[in-house]
Image (cartoon, rainbow, N blue to C red):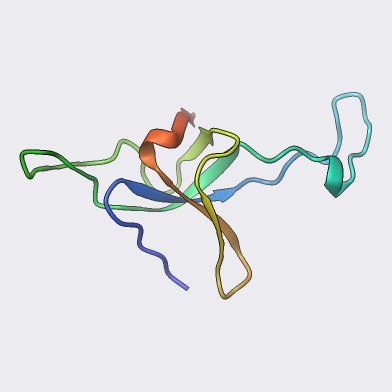
Length: 96
């Protein structure tokens, strides 16, 4: 299923949380923290400004980004894929 976000929204696929701590302790699913890093899979056209112009987004498909812990709305596609839809302003940084 293809998803096309509107305006300044983006679709992000969260990267998996780490299963082992730095000390070597294996974490069960219930103890894992919610991931805050993901890969952008779709972007909207941009933010509509008051003067009617569209300001393009700074992020693009394929970028790895960091976002707030509780940012976005979680959705599940018909294929069973879990994605987040959020505004570009919820993105904290692009990982290079």
